[in-house]
Length: 296
Length: 295
Image 1 (cartoon, rainbow over the protein chains, first blue to last red):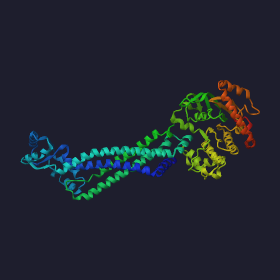
Image 2 (spheres, rainbow over the protein chains, first blue to last red):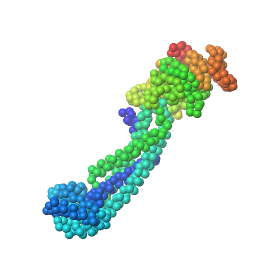
Image 3 (cartoon, chains in turn red, brown):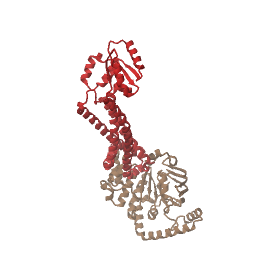
Image 4 (cartoon, each protein chain N blue to C red):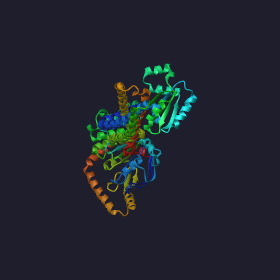
């Protein structure tokens, strides 16, 4: 108990003493993790919205409920022979229902309708064009085919979203990585300053026989706390921005869904916090490892 | 309690600090390490507290094989050793009480134990009334008493003191010596490296004299420098031992003779204070001349 109080007191004392440097370290963690978490959340938004269009599917043909399975198989193999078609997947009614449940997760009213009448979701054939630009031709050819009740193609919005995600993803990950390294270095620096400020104390601790871990723990806790604060700020920031986007972007076309499942936010948010703490631990450990005052 | 067996210490860069030193210090002894600067006194202290490891030879401290001790076990060794230094090493932003309590806090003592032990040891060093002062509000002697209190508060088996009176005037030094003597009387082994002739001569305890890394004299109830005192116990053997040890360095011997002569002059100047010192120490603790703990 004495020990716990001691560690907490020492760790927080230094955060106060070197407020400016600590602030810098926390900011770096915050920005790095905001980018990371932002990329993750944006990726999830895109994933939800492009669920049907995954694996380069650009055309979806919904099948009437009365078509026999054998006929569907025939149709699938026929379409596959078209030269502008790379591949065709068959999605059953139950698979489509699961997909719809994810898509509509944040629209309780629609979800209720879905649960009451699960039968309204049709089976479909999903077509992957050889060249992305060929999808118009495929749509035209499919529209005359019997047994199909509707043909949809990925609109330019979907295309833009996927392109944006792919472009941003690389850039954001690189930025987050660079800033993550900076954050670790800055945390290491704050710990270095803390050790330097307390070198007399440390010397005396060693003289009277304080164990190595007793000397080190406050610094490690301090690094972890700095990382955690940065992580909490990042998660809070992204969650707030995301919720604001949901409220503000009500004018978007109905089929674009910016809401993200709360479970997803919590799970990934916890991971981000863990990363913050890890960055802090790595930073302080680095600093402790190179510091001669702490060598036995 | 402390044993050096053929210990040699060579620092990086080839400086030989100790050469083949063998010393055995029994539990409860009070030992002075004397000798000129650079003779290896501080190195011996640092080896005893395992601040350094020897280049050769074996060291046992408080029942532990200190020269072979892995780094992570050093803290446990240190808990059986109290240390006092010339520069006090007090924390300026903590009070006297907190400075002493710190040594218990960081070794994980319970608060209740700290609350009873610290006042006791402050009373022992005569600072009960100044527990709430900051070190910078205290005189040098008082600061050193705080540092002795901190060294003793965990009741170590051994107290190591490296020039504890080096920054203090003779009268203040007497106060510190009285406390060290009292601590020694509790059964604590005390090893003190010093330059202070008056103190060594007044205390009449075991003296280990070092010269350029070698033990050149080891006698119970010795004085600081046998060759310049008017009544040296064994002047001839010591001188013989020294010249035998370093036959080729006669110029250095002359040098140290000059040093001794001037030191002697200084001693003459402070003879009055010295007499007072001797009287004070022996008066306070009349048993000081008995062999007692030395056996």
